[in-house]
Amino acid sequence: MGKFVDVTPGGARGLASVFAALRRDWLPGVLSVTPTGFRNGLRQNWKTRLQGRSAIFKPGENFGPGVDYDMKIMKLIFRLCLFTLLMTARQSTASILVDYFRCPPAERERLTKDGATWDKFELDLVTSQSKAMRDALDKLKLDGLSKEERLAKIGAAIKQSRNPAHFNMEKDWQIIAYLLTGDAKIKEENVPNAPLHNVIFGGIKTAAISGYGPVRYFDAKSVGEIAAALASADRKAIAARYDPDTMKKLDIYAPPEANEKKAILQVIDDLTAFFQKAAAAKEDVITFAW
Image (tube, rainbow, N blue to C red; front, side, top):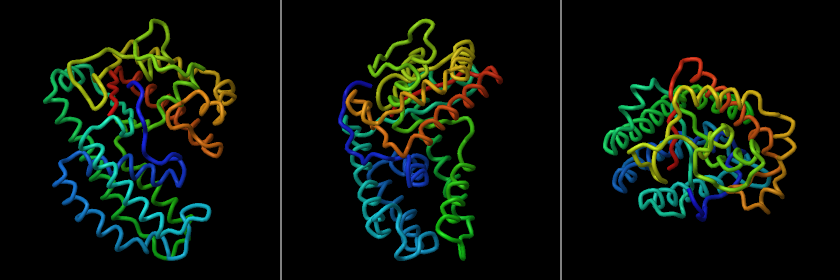
């Protein structure tokens, strides 16, 4: 993954989880296409959303402390446009997101056998996720609900729309690596007998290339080892390492804020559950950064 500059705003786990999920699960389906496709997608998907935003957020309500919702909408649109330019050009200044996908070994072998097959799969993955999320949000009935109730329903709908075989760590990969191992260095290699390192930086390289290097995978044996290691990892030691100031000094990518501790620790539990399901099904897990 190497060194790079992330130009996107931090704190993606907060409002928080709702808009982080919107960027993580909805926008990739729009931004993974050509600039023309993006413009069409923007007109088709966001014009309706923004015109109807009063059904979700009422005028005068805040997205967060001291931030009016209209200003936040503008910032969200700006971020969306910025992401489009960066991801279309695949410049090194774009965010690095890490994803996992679990599937039977034969399917993993088929998906990663060459670049063309992988590119089609990756596009289909984000497109189907985008559609599932739009469909889930379109079915919501939010009239008469409080802001908290609306946010809760939106968050639940987003969560339920996700593909259970797909896990997106978003920008938290180096934070998770540090919390699991205590090591802040980026070492992109598969280390023997180090499953907590390997879950982020290891895996077997394939012929397919994603946005930031080769697509990698864990075979069923490695998946079982990682699942066991994650489940037995000392949660108290992990929680004790959660120090945003220390992580900033260590130059951890996209360092979290103090109020994001619960959400970050939940990522570890969710990743554990994901690998446990893969291990139980004797599946391989594909990992890729983009």
